[in-house]
Amino acid sequence: MTATVDPTSASPNGVAPPGSVAGARLRPAAAPSADDPGTHYRSRPVPRSWGWTTPGGGRAANVEGGVLYQGTTQQVCGLFPFAVSSGAATPGVPIGRHMHTAEPIGLDPSEWLREGLVSNTGMWIQGQPGIGKSTIVKRLMVGLVSFGFSAVVPGDVKGEYTALVDHLGGRVWRIGRGLHSLNPLDAGPLRSALAQSSGQERARLEETIRARRLSLLEALVVIVRRSEIAVTERRLLDVALDLAVSADPTGEPTIPDVVRVLTNPPAELLSIAACETETMFRRDARDLLNTLGLLCAGAIRGIFDRRSSVEADIDTPALSLDISALDDDDDEVVAAAMLSSWAWAAAVIDGSAALGRRRNIFRVQDELWRALRVAPGLVERSDRVTRLGRHRGEISAQVTHSLDDLEALPTEADRAKARGMASRNGVMVLGGMADKELDGIRRIAPLTAQESGMVRSWAAPPTWVSGTAHPGRGKYLIKSGERMGLPVAMSLVPTERQLYDTDQAWRRATP
Image (cartoon, rainbow, N blue to C red; front, top):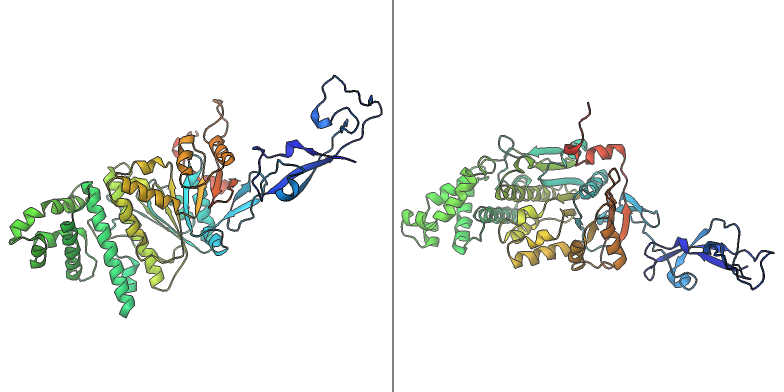
């Protein structure tokens, strides 16, 4: 008996990469029927799945269901070249099923790192608004917390993680006028670690705290000024910060404390500014003084000019700094809040490790570029604030709508550093996006034509008929290095639909 291959079992793109697993349905072909007129071909067209009406042509009145056989393309490609690439039973938080093979797919960059699948645990998540970027992040958060991680959401601009953090038994601090305040110079749990340390470890922690405070103070000056800070001003901030720390009995100065030191400069500051009198100093340093003054008396007044009213509980399963009360403020207010929140969260992570209570961290940075586009140099400074002295054991998820956000950064140097930051992530999760966005992705990660076509097809509804589901909702392509991507479709249980819903403002009110 001869055998034919069912061409309907081919993949949608019809092509499989070398080394993938082939899926082909093989059917036993029926012998020619008794009434078949030998070699005579009938002129009437016959469906190809029934074969041809010729001896050995596989003509059959009934076609039974095929049987799925799997093998490598090296084994099967000669028999059936239209192979279907396999999925991967990857360990981690269950994300969904492979869209071609229906295999369950898990995602956990820390486990992938242990198994040698990735070189780092950074995640880059990108896609059009409304396709479910925050949904996959929240699914990961729930799963990783169940695995023993602590989730940290520093600077939740829209407040969309608040309900989930509360549900997980975590702590949400709401930052804003009339709400909680956050002192940018607060060392957080590092202060307790410093009190319990001695010798070289104490010196290391002191330098870590000092460097992070100085970097954040410089960043806030750049945000308010929207331009770079001069070398002399950096030296003045450096010394003024040290003097403010030594003058405060708690070792926790605020920005007004730094302003007071600069307003009444000691001889050391006069020497740095090359001024003979305090009057000359205040005149030469007036731009710096006025910039710091805006942090205390301008649009940001009452938020970052007081001691922190938030406390870090390093044993909580989830922690969020909700800054949604500032979402309608100017860009510099939001940027200052985001950078201050990132620095505070980094201190929480470092403090837990320094106290010997290390826990793996899942850190979410959503709306990332809203803070970095305000002024030049913030890409490097934000990296310094969040990474300086940071211990390993952290999964970071950076979420954005578009790589056009990179082009909105002020200088080419900032744009180059940001592109490097995106490309260095070990895992890339792509949702539906247009051709223009895919061109940018291809510059930092390899995409096949079939992968690009699939992601493009998720970008917009195919028709104008209302009531149909968006084709890209809950669909993701997980990429890492040169491997073929994993196309995954996620489904949610009712509780998740309620907790992860970011469209509640548009729900119709029910009577």
